[in-house]
Length: 316
Figure 1 (cartoon, rainbow, N blue to C red):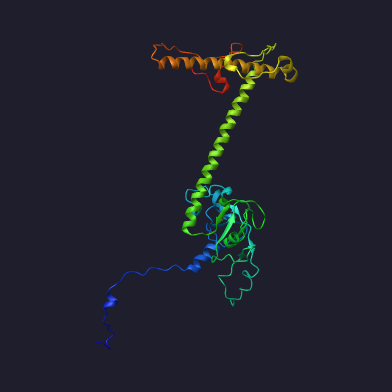
Figure 2 (cartoon, helix red, strand yellow):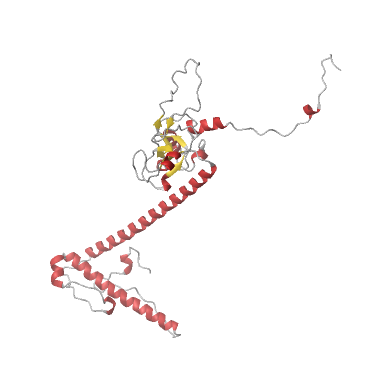
């Protein structure tokens, strides 16, 4: 056969083998990570920020992402952990004097060196091009190489002198293991902050209820204040009170009345707790007791209940 335009196919042309695995260009990946915004895929330009996972963003892109209220955000998965502008840190980057930028390339006769970085480590001078590990501090935003952190061990920042802890060190564009560790630390940090906020809120509510109680006492203040006498009740043993003369000299009438009301309420509480303990002991020993509905102790003078202390309504 031949000379008639026909061909004889061979076996390797008919039988298809497995597809070759596409190799990722590491140089292109490094250039994309260290020179382009993770969110908008645009060239990084100041101000540059970094998240708690070590990814680089343009600050304008992060603000637009947070302001976008649409259901589907473009490339939202890359920044789904950013809930507020407080979740990112603005970086203090040091320019590389050897980097010429985009000038001089208008004629098209210049070769761009992709490995030439825009920024360097201010301590040891290493270029931030992905060949060396870099990190930043959450407390101040300063960026330097990991080599500088290991060689010059200190508890303060090498550039600005701010004190930092190990939890403040975030690796930029780290490996999968680094990202997993940073993610775990981020979740623990946010959980700890949430618990502290809840604790402060609970304490604030307690203080507000006490202030309301003082206001109730002020509104119910009688025209003549009762004199405060030293208490000798067994429930108040060990408590030291000042003499009435010295007390009246150092305190105002409103404070005197509030102190007297607190003392009376404390005595009523002690009596109430004593009754409850006696009932428990009787029930534990097998005694037959008919429990009757008991009311909460009140102040006999002004009818102030325990519920008013904590700002709650009396149960019907």
